[in-house]
Image (cartoon, rainbow, N blue to C red):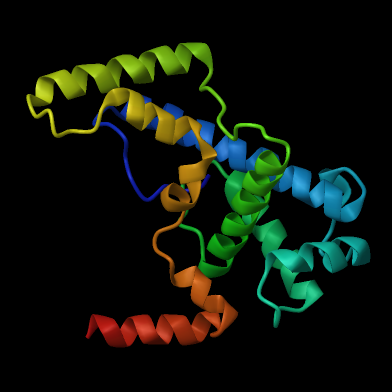
Length: 188
């Protein structure tokens, strides 16, 4: 399961519902992209599938080989389907961004909203928790519960929620090792 870079509430049950919802939405999109790239059910796709390699390659930096792209995309799906929360690698964040942007572009082209409501029971619970926390804070500068719920349900904010920084965008110019080396120098 994708580890998100933020918590939306102090209530762990509400956060778990939100994490599951966001992860499920991204997983659905990743599966759709695998099936479109391969022309077959995602469960039948392997990293050696030539059609999949050739088509999924466009989700990654230009210097990634089709073989590496296929391997990385399937590793991302493995992370998404895992029960444990994991922080995505830079390459996985790059692919997440591509998945999200592709979906947003498709919605824009079709004049459709990329928003999807939480399941009714989860939505009711999360909304109530957000409302209670907002009222208890006494701080009207806190974000409005409806605004927070909108961030959860509207995929326009998923790039910000699902990635930990914009370092993945540097993969167009640097390797992951080079970026990690630069990060190490900044930490000194």
